[in-house]
Image 1 (cartoon, rainbow, N blue to C red):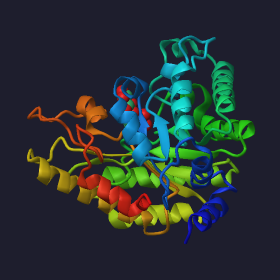
Image 2: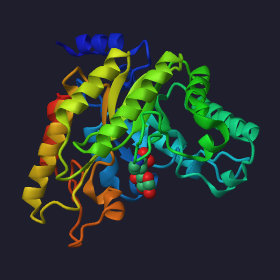
Image 3: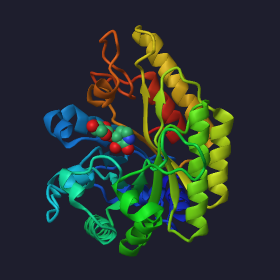
Image 4: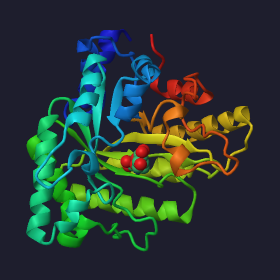
Length: 360
Ligand code: XIL
């Protein structure tokens, strides 16, 4: 299939629900620098201070990615210094970088229990909570309408210990609004940008553990309820922060993705990396184990059909959150991502390319 044939397929597949694949196809036509042609959009999360301080990072993203996601520049903590203010400088700078390099941008995240600024503690009634949630979503989604084609609307609403499929994580939002803040957030986002792909993003649903199985059950329950209730939910985001050495539930994960597709949802891998805290010290051995775990999870989630996008939570090991979140007991540098500390390719990148298609 030629480049234009590929574009047609991507457009047809993605346009109705604002799929990110279609957005990538059109962005790569208008970008100052042509983004790599891929079967499947591939991108990385990036933090503005890293992008500004190390030109190698910008180069690596332009060379390897056709989409970017700000690590924290679209979180409440960054966007909302006070109750009155919106501070868009950081997110705008990443948006500019994306535009200049023909990259599509994903948005992360409109509603989360974490990264809330202190002033949100002053929210003290149902009306205030609904008002703040609405104003935030309306303002942020409107600002990036047309550029951010895919949003993690609600992030991490399933608790780590799930006792029933109905369990949801307590948060500021649930405290005042109960569970209804979840469909509400989707409705508001869709009102402001009917073209955007609206995603429900979750972690720790990939493993062959009781906890992971229970989280999958609750996530499935939530997705089904949202769809049954008519909420404009379009896709499931599987974060895929893999724990090195913890087995993937291949069958369970494939079944989960198939179930989601059956109710009309696309699937994205949104934050892939491998936490190598417990893996062997030897770097080659560690890199091989990491690559094979990545292959395993991608094989499982693509078995029912193609992903809509694949995103790693960073690109180079040098700029991974894992060095702070899960340092190794032997103090050796972590290696959770496709490129190493010097931006050299690792086996992880070969696996990514097997799934997204090589640059031509
Ligand atoms: C992480 C960032 O990478 C860190 O820099 C920050 O300190 C905490 O948040 N799941 C998510 C992301 O949805 O927002 C998190 O990002 C990683 C886990």
